[in-house]
Image 1 (cartoon, rainbow, N blue to C red):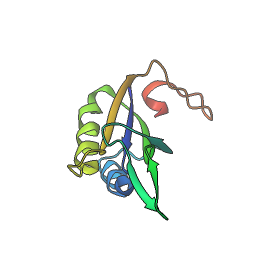
Image 2: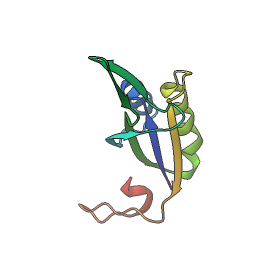
Image 3: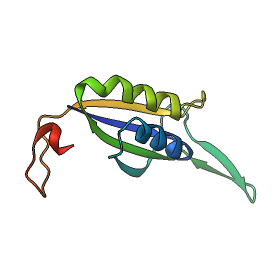
Image 4: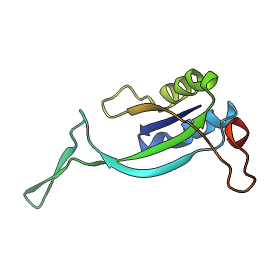
Amino acid sequence: MKRVEAIIRAEKIDDVKSALAQAGYVGMTTYEVRGRGRQKGYSRFYRGREFRYDLLPKLKIELVVDDKDIEGVIEIIERKAATGDVGDGKIFVFPIEEIIRIRTGERGQAAI
């Protein structure tokens, strides 16, 4: 099993969430995060002073999928989160050793 973490633009969450759900991946966790990369933020002027915003708001999505499904999940996130502009985000994939559902004690694939 693999854990997928994706940092995406907040306005793309509904597209990504809907596409993942249609493909059968309904379980996910999201976080509001701030970060910077090549986008490097932006500047605004207010009353003659410059204000620099270099930690931009993003959303982080986490989900766990079976090894055989990883490429499909990555493709969905890439397709639905992309705008073609700098700042679209990143996808990270991590191995998962074990999953246990607390309520029932189920382990592995059955616990997803």
